[in-house]
Structure formats: C-alpha cells, structure tokens
Length: 121
Image 1 (tube, one colour):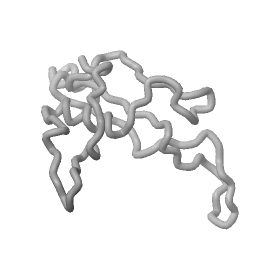
Image 2 (cartoon, one colour):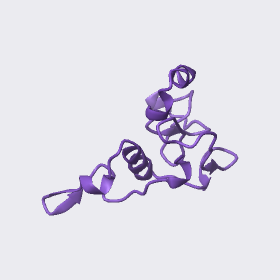
Image 3 (cartoon, one colour):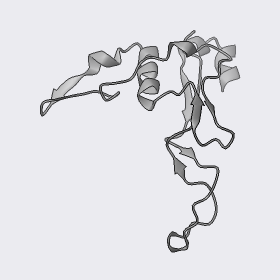
C-alpha cells in the first residue's frame, strides 16, 4: 500500500497509521479459572504504533523498551501525544477542540497531550 501511494504521488498527503489499542506482555499470567495458558496479556505501558506519509519524517524510530519489551526506557509517547500529533497532521489543533461539560474541560486528548515534533517532516 505504501509503495502504491508513493508511486501515485499520494503518500505526501495521505497519513497511514498502523497499531493496536494496547501492547502485549512478553509473558503469560496463567489462570486456569479464566482459561489463560497461552499468549501475552494486555499491556498498556508499552506498545507499537507505525506512521507513514502525510507529514511524517521517513525512517524515524522513536522510543525504546527494556530488553523484555515491558517498560518504556527511552522517548515515551503518551497516547494523548499520539492523538495530538495525528490531529495536527490532519490540520486540527487539538487544544481548539476543548469544550466544557458539567464544569470540566474535555477534548480528544483529555486536556493534555503535545504534538510529537521529532517525527514530523
């Protein structure tokens, strides 16, 4: 798909995002009651996202986990930062999407998040 978008001259204006909603642990929490014996458990502390085109700097890797893939040890990016960056690449300022509800400010980045400029072209 990336090669096709690039060949057609569309990669510069198309943001490609690949990832999951959470990571996986490198080990299993066995639990016979729940039928757990194979596969990794959910792990929100470290996960992979892959972005291309649409204003992303090519060839950049940001962040690093420990040798087990369990904890982020270098350049962590919070999910709110990822969301702020994607919105920025789509031409939206996430801070301008703030609205008040029952006395509290809300937005897609939960009144936090910063654009990750290290990955921008």
